[in-house]
Length: 130
Figure 1 (tube, one colour):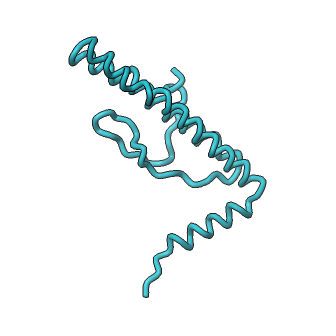
Figure 2 (cartoon, helix red, strand yellow):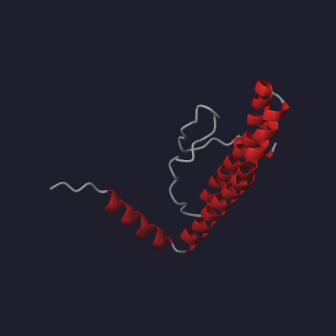
Figure 3 (cartoon, helix red, strand yellow):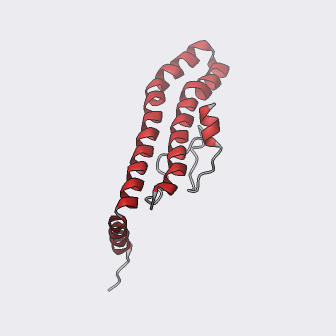
């Protein structure tokens, strides 16, 4: 239920989907740093929802599909294999949300640091042709 409630918010970033599980890929684009606390909440909820959705897939969806294919033994095997991911994925989402929260606090208190980082990124992304 929590994953559904949090998952209703649409991601502003595009995500590629893994065809075998219909889950967002972990190699997606990382959003820009938040400028203030106002921009933190959406990203924090998206991070938590992503972790909960992944845990849901590993503990409920995939074992259910395996149960339909090969019975109880296959479903139990999938649940056991998915337990580490089911524990780590929500923790990873919470850590990402906390990271973004701290960046938002820092950037609201010290906007000069954000400007320096953005200027540095622009310099590094510049294509210099000789």
